[in-house]
Image 1 (cartoon, one colour):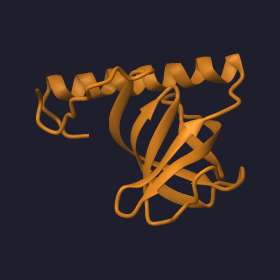
Image 2 (cartoon, rainbow, N blue to C red; image 1 turned 90 degrees about the horizontal axis):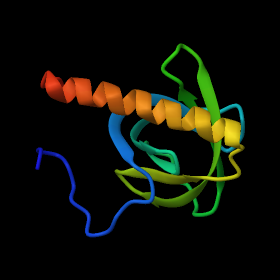
Image 3 (cartoon, helix red, strand yellow; image 1 turned 180 degrees about the vertical axis):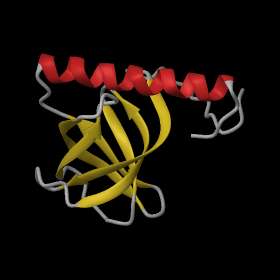
Length: 122
């Protein structure tokens, strides 16, 4: 097992990718907060940052799409852990938006695989 990877006793519903990507997020579409996206899948994300969030709060994430643009995703806070950040579950995604999100995840998974092959940190 590569250093820094976790082993889980359950199967995840969606493949995730670990990364260190600066993002904007917030309680509305203006996405006023800045954080570090550390985990991403087609179902959710983990954003590291100091802003406390209550469970079930609606959140917006402005996600770089890998092609120079951004994808606005709506989610719900699952939990907040001081020092770790907020976990977001994506909700109410149209098929078009989910397909775009899957492409973003695949883009970052490919980039992560390339970094690992060349022993480059995220």
